[in-house]
Image 1 (tube, rainbow, N blue to C red):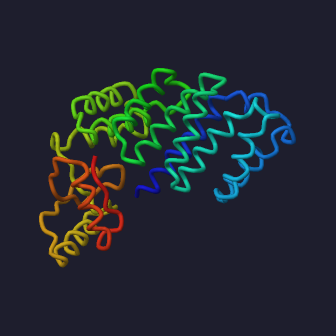
Image 2: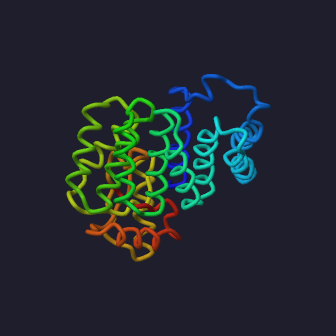
Image 3: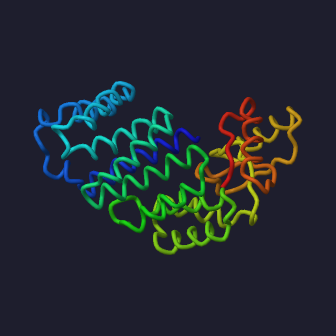
Length: 265
């Protein structure tokens, strides 16, 4: 579930860049002028992130192509997120925001930095990065998605009130967005506690099967929730944890039984 979510985050970020029209895409330079960058984009589109990383590193370092450096750095950050090299992604996004030529690049770099910090469980720093991204521009990035990530960062760092405030703003400003249902779901959860979601399911019968499987492995206290967190209509959840790291540990323990186990919110 977590890897699927990161893929969604990266895909939306790429679409946002195209819609926002960062300078490189608007001017459509000849590919031979930015050869490594163009090839890196193609390889990443083909799923060869490792090959793309090598080319994008060269594109970002080439002194003759400074005009496209930040575009290469942004894509390099996305590439490293896909490779789960989160410190490397952080480094690329940080450099991109330092050298940003446009508002769109600056906002995207800060949002990407937030994603990299979230993946490293550095939630307070992630929240700061997301706040800065939204302050730079809420039109050059996917604002609802960034606000949802910001809310989670606050909640996971223990700042529940700030998290709920951002969720409420998300649902009021962007009620029809793809992220609004998840925000509403989090707002209905018990206050100030985390749960472990063993899985989300299309039917209640499938959810009941998961509950039975957990019981067979001496895991008790599972409950079925309708309107599952970021997934299908029915979810199986258990536990009330005050700290995120405690819930994360329990989710890891359940992985052999429930491969999609994750912490909510």
